[in-house]
Length: 228
Ligand code: ATP
Image (cartoon, rainbow, N blue to C red; front, side, top):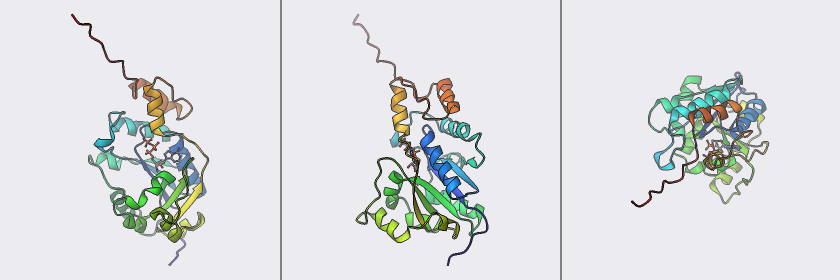
């Protein structure tokens, strides 16, 4: 049954943030404003070992998220997944947030369309929809999945207006056209590893941190040893 939630919802944006950039921040900002959320929690995740981690350490990714959010009321950095010291599934984080904020509060998990297209492969995705809504930002280059696709079918069953996500605690999916910022952390890392500056694609405070900590530095050319 639809209830009119008394308290504004809470947005959740998980990611590797390696590094955080304006694509992430704009997604969070559009959700904060569009859904009139109380706040958006940015939750850096553990990077699975097979993925490789050019930043080298979780504490750098966390520090960059903190710098990026420092001046924005409404952005809250949540380090719970990193504090656990082992990878956590989104469903576990959402269970903890549901416990923290109670059964009535709308929780809205934010993601790009690329992430949503793989959502039906996530661990306990049905349980995730019991715990929160999904708000999906259309990322440049991403297509709406058709109903042959599990995500497309899910969208057909659960699709809802943006406003209606405030009426119930969980279970609805809204796809929102967002401003097209075709930035990915992969692209930024590649640029920096080729000696190119990421300036103007991420906050200047994050750029300075990357420089100070020498993150994503170009690989020095392999040394050649003259034969003696
Ligand atoms: P990588 O290139 O390392 O995979 P990424 O830039 O895609 O990283 P993630 O940390 O993996 O960033 O993404 C976290 C969330 O932010 C995901 O839901 C993803 O879809 C979304 N996202 C990332 N970049 C953008 C963007 N430019 N516009 C909209 N959403 C984005």
